[in-house]
Image 1 (tube, rainbow, N blue to C red):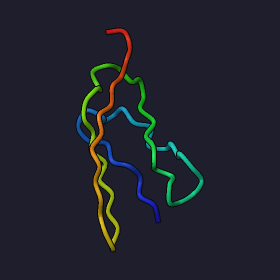
Image 2 (image 1 turned 90 degrees about the vertical axis):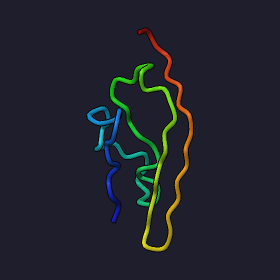
Image 3 (image 1 turned 120 degrees about the vertical axis):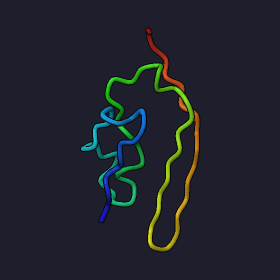
Amino acid sequence: SSKRPQELGVLKGRLNLEYAASVDANSVHRALHILKPSPDLSGDYTCHVATFQSEDRKTKNMLVFGKL
């Protein structure tokens, strides 16, 4: 079964947790739908994925453009 993404930190209350990036169960949560993105969300984000066999994490920078 596939678990939904968790809202943490600055993304709390700003994600559409019903969003599905794919119908494929292995990639349904490969992307996030951010509600009302704004420049204050710019920064480094880490995605952490774990299964019973392994785990992985990746950090990337996200830059959000828009009017302040």
